[in-house]
Length: 488
Image 1 (cartoon, rainbow, N blue to C red):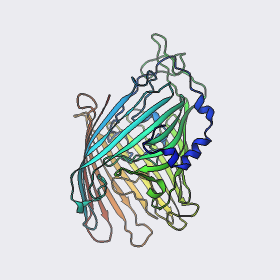
Image 2 (cartoon, rainbow, N blue to C red):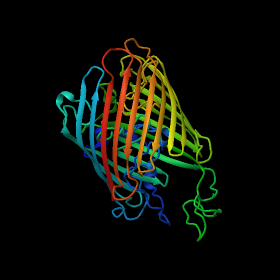
Image 3 (tube, helix red, strand yellow):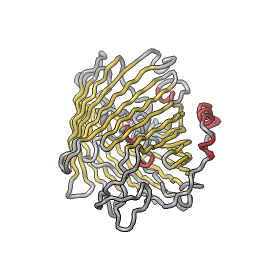
Image 4 (tube, rainbow, N blue to C red):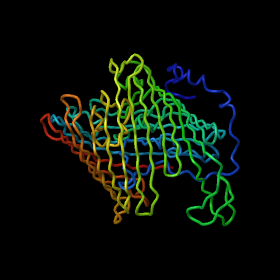
């Protein structure tokens, strides 16, 4: 295994996890495929329009937490590894200006992004990935630091954020070792600045299809087919559609994190706020049957914190103009072991409900979250997954409730142009000295879906946060982002 810093020697916990893995899983390579699967999609990510989803930037639904196929590095062609190597470049320019409640200001303009590659599978079993990240200062005074676009002191930075091995144990079972991006509710990229979080970890991710395969009608054609999954249909026959229930699962150990405005990896425990070297054990699964899914994931960091997360999503089938969708979440956080994170015992919970109603080119969303227990909820390593967590505020303080209303629309006169507006109305937290807050966000984005500008994304974001007490003006947050992503 190749690492710039010898991961297994430097981190004894990882060595213990590797030693526990069955050696037979490494030795038994899957047989070669008899037919090539369909071409993989581009490595670059397509921006989500305002009417496609109400999931906020930086959040990861649990239903996406174990899906390596859905990320930008998906590569299922298994021919010669070097010939199948794919390269991706993302150029980003980001301006952020925030005026805070106490009249302090943060402002910066940065340019950078990332570039990397992922090989095909050597011996049809092992693929290697590498990505470098950078953010460089264009504008911003030292007295306006704090945007997180740059390193502290308005300094530029560069980092080797990904260097990993993707080991294909079976068609639907993969082992990832090294530095890599991940997306789960509480350990994720949180890609809302110049560069994302990445992690030093070892993870095993898999997928099971439940039940016997039964061919279904293809969406593009009539009739049924006797071909099974992965088999080519006979001439003139409709391609098979696999509609079996799916169980996605994953387990892993996360040892270190490179924060989104840093060039260095630090212990997960230190990043959480405790001056100790601790990692995080993670295990979870998600079951999907048609438009219904349910799952849970647990994060355990010894002597620091245990976080449990449950989420369910379902939809009511209907016509093109009526297809309401619903979601529910529950979060439990509590201290464990020597309680080194806050120096005392703590426990807190939050539940949330969300409903989405697509209507033509529009999407209307309503949501509610409520925090209970005796502490503020925490996001020790990445973005917070609460349904009321938006551009600035998370609305997860002790005793705080929040209502969310959102409307998004895809314009038809210019393909790729979308907009949304939302408001979150929060209640007063339980702790003395904290005040109720309301936040209003406005977003305009243009991402051409085809043509020579495909890969370009221009986005304007504005937020204002009102605070019911404490004096001072409203908080205002303005962001302008230009992305250009290419892959080859």
